[in-house]
Length: 261
Image (cartoon, rainbow, N blue to C red; front, side, top):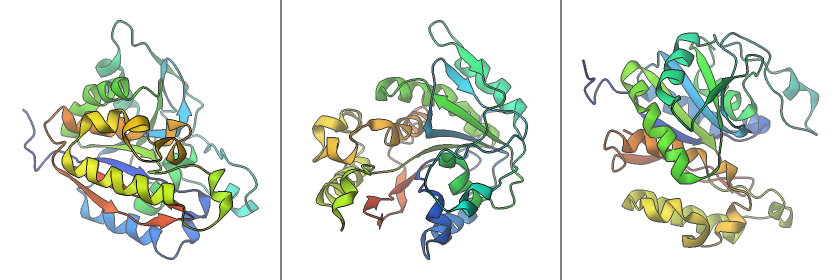
């Protein structure tokens, strides 16, 4: 039976922050309030900016240690745990949906959740009682990532929350200048308008169609998860049903986070 729109899980693109997000006075509450408004997922599928691997890889399907993939932070950030159950049944479904000629799927059973996955999930689902599966990005090509999202879209009708986890602007080197950089505000405003207009072509070609695109994303891995989310929305005709749930800036970076459906 095909799920009705009321039963279908939304698809999210969120700006995931860094480990110090937990100490921010505002952002954790915004993430918690967002999850409280969503239907409770049966499982969560995360595509994070911090895992690029080809062929496309499925992470651990049982609880394994987190990947603390960051450096130079105070020790307590490395002691954070998030023991969410693995999602072997979801992994089986992903394999069936994605495996095709030219699109192999591999398993990396010891690969735990990285900070692009667990940092926001700690705030959104602190009980760590929902199965989570992380999937790698095998490419940064927006068109191919949208196709992956389209293939994953049926999972939404099975209670799976699909999350593309990145950062709406991401240029840490340029932040050394201090203040709120113009390239971050300009790109954020452009992205908001392009999403509202459903301008898929502009978003796909964002490095050329957006103001300061290469400054906002000198390397595109933090914007790329958006296209998986967009594909999961496009497959069921929901690109026009989007809203920015979180906006504003954090340490100069745009934390815009978007819900489709």
